[in-house]
Amino acid sequence: MKNWIATSGILVLFCGLLVAAPKPTEPQLVLKEVVPDGSGFEFRAVVSNPTEESTSFEVLTEEGKSLGGVGGGTKEPVNLWLMVDSSTLCRKNNIDERVNRLTRKLKSHLNPDSLVSLVSYTNTTLEIHHNHRPVREMEESIVSCDNSLLSTTFEKPLEHLLSARETSELPTIVWVFTSGNIDLSKEILAQLKKRNVELHIALYNPFVASEIRPVLTEIQDSLGKENVRFSTIAADSPILPEMRRRLSFSPPYDLRGKRVRVRLQASFGDKKIDSAPFNLNVPEGNVFLEKYLRVALWLALGLLGLWLCLRIVNRYRTKVCSDCGRTQRHTDPGCLFCLKDRDAFLVGSFNVRDKHKLGHSDLVRLISDSSEIGTHRRSVVPLIKSNQKRRACYVTIIREALPKNRFAYRLVRNASDSSIQISVNSNPIQKDRYLASGDVLQIDGAEFSFYSGMEDSDVA
Image (cartoon, rainbow, N blue to C red; front, side, top):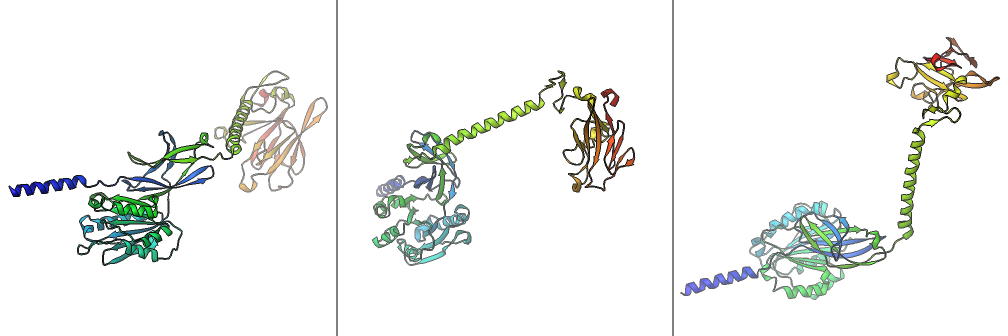
């Protein structure tokens, strides 16, 4: 009977301990600082006890309306100190293996400019594995637990931290993995406050969480609640480093000049956590630059589009001659029906750029008073030559007025390029010459005929 009562008492006590054991701490989002940045803001946010390594952030009103996402932000460089209580309970909770896995993730998780120190301690030992060096130089460290040594407060590694000379302006962050001994002297707390150290206490012995609460409250009162975070670690969950991000947020235009109460939300897949609500005094900004110039920009884009439409319509719409009333092609520079009696033509196989016209005669009307022939883009007959002669003009056909509304055409050779062979009816020319209808021009291998004052049927 006595054995049965003793066994029942042990079972009741064990069940009570299981019920009383605190659950692992849920992820928390803490907004450290809000800094105005022009017409927007920069947030410094910390996510402690994350369940996943990737996250995104969003700004919400108190009613839950989204004001826009801020992405994943940029990683904030820090001066990180990892302090591990490697006494008896460390081995029981596999803290050494879990911390070693954590250190291997730091290179990819932290900003490359961050500094990292790794220290393990017991009541009699203090072992420094990585001392105040950039995270990119961090080698694989091995923290090992010792079952024969007892736990102690982490004052000894904190004294090592405080004795190190400040060599950077990075914020100092201390992560302490402890079995429950967190008593700190007032002198240590005063020095930590002077150096504005942030403290994250991770308890891997959750059964003493309620007993150490008064000590934790004292530490929070000394350093400030915003600088002290506390969490419990589950026996089988991985340890993920807390996330520190700088986030840029541009409020919507309709909130300019208003005071709004918002909250920051972090998302880990399907899980979402919110920060405490806070107020944003949204600046008005430069109304002229942000409102009127925006309207002017849209107006300018609209006018540009309208101008392009008019150009397209004017180019491709059907044209009608005002003198004879006949329809013209949009590519014709003038009415060919009115000019046919005084018009001149070049006929030949010179349009070598169009493969469909190879071996066929092409026709060009000489409508202007001066028509150039060469490799220049203004040439009425484009000749293809080497790059050195890409913009050359070999000859110019000039139209001269004669009595009785008649015209004469004079061939003028460009004297600057004497290396080009130019002939009329197989006779080389070195100076000006008047052309007669039916003359054959040979210019650097290209051959075409000249006709003047003829009907289209006669030229064909």
